[in-house]
Amino acid sequence: MARVDDLAERFHKHVSAPWQKNLTGAERTVFLVYPRTDERKLLARLPLYEEKTRQAGHGWRVFSFHSLFSEWFATLDADHQQVLLDEPESFHLEMDLDGHHDSPFTRYVATKLLELLSDEASDANTVIALIGAGSLYGFTRLSAVLDRVRHALRGQLLVFFPGSFDGSQYRLLDARDGASYLAVPITPFNGAFES
Image (cartoon, rainbow, N blue to C red; front, side, top):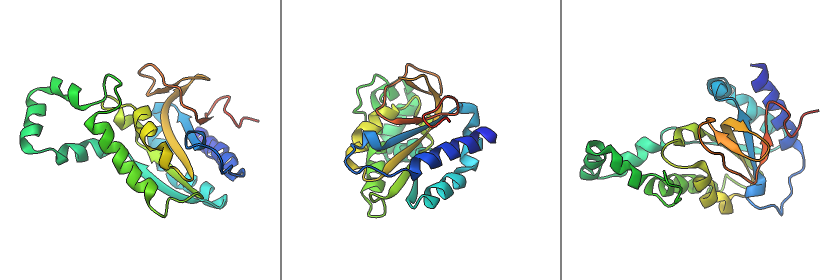
């Protein structure tokens, strides 16, 4: 738990600093990077991150990626579902596995997140916490979703990121080639706020 609590303190330092209003959505994105083995511990301590955010005088909202695949699948008509189940390789056409960033699932996830971002409670003084990024793995790229929604971000976006950061590349679940995000990294080791 010490690592999770240390990350919360680092986040608190970040969220307590004055927020610049002229930054792009990408520049108002924070990646809280932690070993994938800490996912459950971190989610269990999610109220601590909310507390740190509220202590800093900001609002807090959570968006979960966890159930979005099953929700999206339920929106398909029965024949379409059956084709996907009978021919699993056809999922390749529905998912963003080649990085084309315009798959039906990517659009669905981005639309759901945009609904939250456009809500009046997601104002310029609010942290939007994204949890469950690992559940996107194999279906779409987190970068594809974030690219579609950053324009709508008014406050700050906090991405709980199970994986690694090597100074230039983020690797979700340490499993694939990394992506470069224009984001503030908060890491357990040699992080942006290490004293």
